[in-house]
Length: 266
Image (cartoon, rainbow, N blue to C red; front, side, top):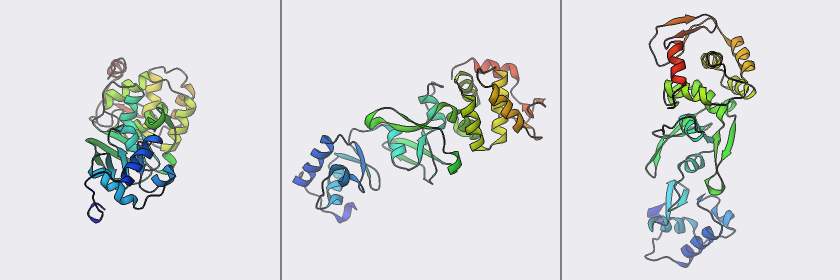
């Protein structure tokens, strides 16, 4: 786009009009496809206006056709803005919900669309594609232009057990699970959506071990899902340890250590 449009030396009337309108409408991020409708104004050449303002550093280009005003840098808003059907999830959501003090090394975005990982304004984004049936438990967080979709606490926990490699590590996840106030109804609904027996067994075992309040229905549900295959409690650990026949789990991290981990804040 940039090589095919005229780049003016100074701001033109069209460019100044655009800046005036986005400030008046308090628009901080937008797409080239709908900005004229948002502003209720038709420009002679919107491509040229945006390219000039980008070159003159009034705008940042997030990706082709997607822009933000220069000082807007909310990484969670940007990550969910540039891909449809998305939400902040996994380790990033654990941090936002206050279930870990450890900041993730990237922003984890869950989406039903395929999207390559990318770096925008110095922030690394990891896009995890999920099946449509797993898109549940999405809430809005924040206010105004800083509002973005995020998985709720229960869905964040379930997702992290479903795909533990995006959870920040076994210790962090155990600590988060122990801290979180969880609803049996939501845990069952989201567990049905992911349909991951190993994850459900792990969560059921931990809910029972920690005597989590309000999770009796979930524990009973999880017990009904137990199969004959033994699963490691820590999927990333060694194949060793005590066998728990009730939950068909192999405790490669023993109960005492799990309880100790649950008392720490990671």
